[in-house]
Amino acid sequence: MKKLLQYLITLAMAWLFYTPVFSADLLEVYNNAVRSDPVSIAANLNVLTSQEVQQQAEAKLYPQASLNGALSENELRVSGYDTQRYSGKSAKLNITQVLFDLQAWRDNIKYKHLIDKTSNDYIQAQSDLIVKVVELYFNVLEAEDALSLSRKNTQTITKNVEQLKALYERQLVPITGLYEAEARLDLALSTEIEAEAALSVAYERLYEVIGTRVKKLSPLKEQLKFLPPDDSIEQWVELALKNNPTLAANKSNIEAAKQDVAVKNAGWAPRLSLGFTQSHQDTGYDNAPRPVTDTSTIALSFTQPLYLGGGISAQKRESVYRLEIARQVEIETRRKVEQQLREHYLNLKSDVLKIKATRRRIESEQKRAESMRAGFKYGTATVNNVLDADTDFLKAQLEHQKAKYNYIKNQVRLKSAAGTITESDILELNSWVN
Image 1 (tube, rainbow, N blue to C red):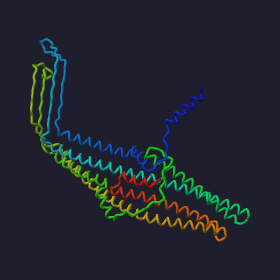
Image 2: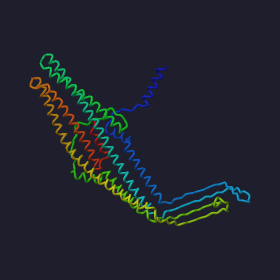
Image 3: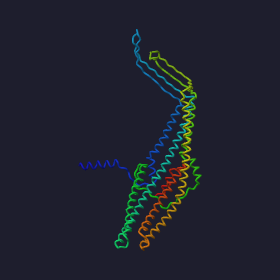
Image 4: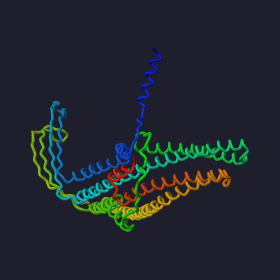
């Protein structure tokens, strides 16, 4: 009974800490990332926060009403008179409406621009998430390919070692050839272990973003067309300057900074408001008893700042500096976006050529490996020739797969920099995997 109880407790603990593991395609991985990525979730919350801040600023332009009331028990002692004990009550209703407050009006406009900024920040966070998911997904596939080819390499060298041992026993090959093959086998085993570690790391980085463990990802299809970008690089740059969310966010930030300068300049402007007060009370100064009075008041209030210790002038200078900082950030971002876009564009064109070149190299290295094995059989090639040819053949396959993955990554990076990437790109890329 005690052992059964321990078993049930262990089973319950395992269930509590169990993390689901499943096979997934690109779309499933992306949907999990959308639900759990803290960066994009925080960016969305920033949008909601900025909307509420703007509502607070706008609220200053609307009517303000407050109701105050008090109930008191009082005791009045006057020398030579009896002590008086009495209850007191008072109520006051205040309603005010701003008629002219230039600073509050401009402040409201500033926060509307900040809503635009956070909205574009959120769009950029969504774009970054798409790029991140695609990169991590195909990093895993690349690591799986590297491990698969490492294992094939190990198996090939193992067969070669076994053959060499048999030939050595028959004194058909020197001991140095066998030693060379065994050294290559040790190196291949080491490379395989490194590939296994790299694959584990790639899966962990994917888990960090999607919050769910997967045991297998859908691989890339074989028959795909890898086309160069259809527009010129200048057209892509023009598209980026128009649509990039970070650039749009920086422009909104500049407009908000301009309005902040206007807000601080309005610190000297007069303020005019209309107020209505209705009061009811039966106590006066120091809660002294008096007849019940009801008072209604309508007042026009005027305020003109004259001197505040130099604070308004300092605030104006601060806002001007912050505006210039925002402009410099926009310049830096524009240059960076243009540089990244050109880099991704050129890399994408280069990837197309690499895919073609590595495909031809695979064919060449395969023929070379077959030739070397035949040459070794007839004594025209050495053990090193055979091992080198097999290794180069596997490397060519790995480079070909890597070129295809790089093409996909650079494609989404280019669209992200141009500000044109959407979830439809995920759907399209998902059709590229099995």
